[in-house]
Length: 624
Image (tube, rainbow, N blue to C red; front, side):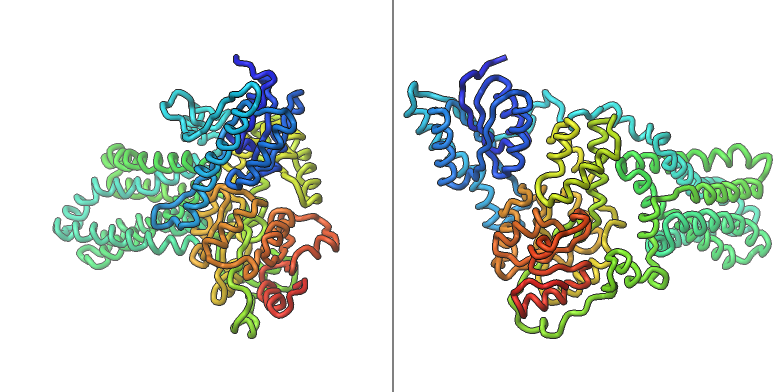
């Protein structure tokens, strides 16, 4: 292995990813490394790791697009060591969007870091390398970071490809409910496929209908099924997925299967009654539609494997249905096969009762306004008497000095528990011997500090790699429908009639899908998600990105969030007004000084319009 003893290196973008690994490697090989990153906290975590291993590194807060900062950084390095031997231009950002979705500001931002940054760092580094004695040095620029020829795996460190490949099978015993769901799916269409074998003979030869009449009946039965497939999507959300599959699907199909035999045989020659039974069977068959939503919810961390089992059940039905006909049509006749199918449907109904979801998910599915209205839900969520749909104060309908309201996601729009559980799972995976209470001890202590990184603290406390922790957390971090606070949609709908709304959040890309799923994206003008934009809070550029996208000045913008360190403080430094929502990851007992940091404090979003009205009329800090 090469050695870099007594060499001085500057690595940009060294707080995470490839830059971090380069800094760690150089330090192990004896170099004096300056860890440069816009995120000082991330750079400090790298330095702490090296220092713990008796290496030597230095933190350098650096925006590579800022010429003055680059010049000063090189001067500081020379002041420490009188020379610079290695420059690694690693800092870079990305933008997600096609040509029409990309603004000039997006383009300028990416080019400022990825092109101008390399130019500035190289310019001042090369000038120093040529001036020092002896002259010389190494200049490295990372222009492509993807594995180009496939010589190394792209999987997350610690991932097991074979286990991933077999997960669609092993999930059957790891998550037994998915196996039950697969059996229910096999029963679902098994009789339907079996009918196609013997019912044509039964309807034409036994009942005396023409072949054309049978084909019309079959076509209408399938048409009924198609129509009710759409309707049961709505019914399932109202009644509950499990209840719909059990009663409308299982019990309903058991009844209509027997009716499809007994009604035509009792009222021979009455085609309209036979047709009605076919329509009813097609309708109840659609009662199994919510099963497609249930299966991935039974294994949210491995939805693909759960859907594979669902598809396995669908394929098995193509064998089970005709096989029953082949085995039993001879000894039992048509009536015997119909009873077997009916009993199978009853069994599927019983099995469906075991497809239970976590209580909070189950509750979120049932949306009966008469039993679960907004008032009770908002009261429970907020713990205040503000549990009612918000009303826009009258004077806000006129001119105001607020054009844009931006929101954080975790703790403000969605319950922070989704992130906490993803973080806990990631820590447990990296350190299997972890006692869960130790995790929550660190979690609670960090909440009380209202500053610093929870992931950094966990990495230090449990001796795990921060980058791996970050990658695993983002892999498991999703906002389920049940995590949406009940006061969000009514409040945002009200505010959208007067203001432009936006999101500024440290969240994974999957948050975009959650916003679409919950219908919030239609209310938003701008969405600045860290994993999409390429910056993290408290970086002011993430906020500035949202402002540039919306074309609004900071002093005409209000930011609403639950974190003092990541929401209130950075937004205020940029000139935005702020509203603190102390729920989720907040100090368990906020101090008066903490309450005073924001321009307003609301305990639920229901109070936000009132807080905005006060802020519009009086710029002093108020509570709502």
